Structure formats: structure tokens, C-alpha cells
Length: 235
Image 1 (cartoon, one colour):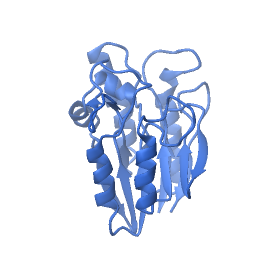
Image 2: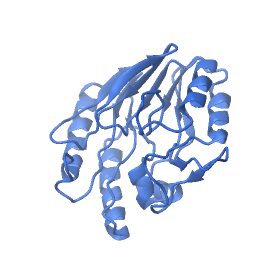
Image 3: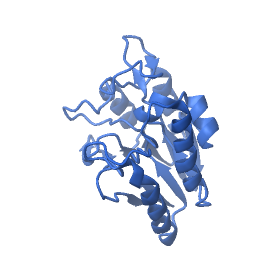
Image 4: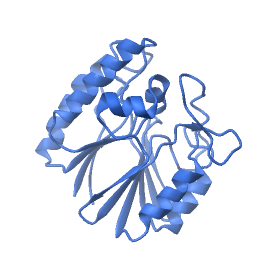
């Protein structure tokens, strides 16, 4: 199975936000789709932040519909996780209804591989479940995976020959605010489940770490300058 993976398009009609070029992302996604089709991928995966909120609900909805339509018109299966910028504008139910993409957590079986998608857009408030991001009631440096999703990860990993995990926020242990607050607990669950690969976005520079035999791959952001980062990952 081949997966075409990218992260952080941050699409909006705004031309420039520091080093980001949000308005270019629709065209970049179209170019990625051409590449993915030429590589004959079996599915496309976006690791979050489909849009960059313009603080206008109508405009945000238009932007999410546009970028989602481009992906769905590829004719390939498309799976997404919500990023913090998506959560700034939409609840998971709203995101799913407008984009047509299922909101995490969920899992997909493809051939002999199980793909598990988790939602780390939660604030660590001292409880085991945290509080979901809603309408600006959060700070992007405070992200967290609820214990119920860690249990979901354990349950859905059971019996699977191979599992790959996808999140927006990072799970590695670098000294970086892009990592979730309970990353150590999540890594322990991955290791206990025998999972060897996890993908994320969020940290726009990207990077890769291997910790206790688990490979943590962070994709660079699509929205940055004129870059066109992606991965063709063959399982």
C-alpha cells in the first residue's frame, strides 16, 4: 500500500502571514494530487490545518469547502486529522459536515495495515480527558490526547498485523511546545502495542526521531513559502 501524506496547507485567501503563503495552498494541493496519482498511491492523508481561519465564519466555511473539494475530487480515499487552526474555526462535527471527512478518532483497515487517526486538539486541564479546543478557548502550546483516545489506540491496535498512527501535534520528546503535554504516556502506549511508525504535522520545519524503536516523522508545512513537502510512504 502506498500513502501520499502532507501537512499544514493552512489554506485561506490571505496572501502572506510571515513566512506562510496560505493562498497558494490550493494550487499546491492540486500539484500534490497530480504527483500522488502519478505515483499510484492508494490513499491521501492530510495531517491537519486544512485552513487558516480568517476570523469570518462564512469565509472559513468557504475556504474549508474549497480545499476539501479539491482533495475529494482526486477520486482517491482521503483521510484527515483536525489541526489547531481547523479547531479554531470548527467543532469536529462542523468540520466533518463541511469537509466530508471523518473527524478523529477513527481507524481504517487497508490491506494488512491498520491506520489509526487521533485528535490531540485538547487542552490539558488536569483531568484525564482534557477539554476540546473550541472557538479560541485554547493556546496552541497546550495540546493533549485524552485517555479515552489512548484506550482507543490500544483497542484498535489489538490483533492488527501492522499499525500506523497519525496525529496533528507531535508525540516525540524534543523540548518543543508543538509536542502534546502527555506525549510520554502516548509513546508508552505505542511501544506496548508494538507500533513502529507515527506521523504528525504542526511543527512547520518537520523532522524525524526514533525513540525506543518507534519512528516519529513530522512533515514540513505545505504553507511555507514556495515549498511542496510530502511523503510517499509505502507499507
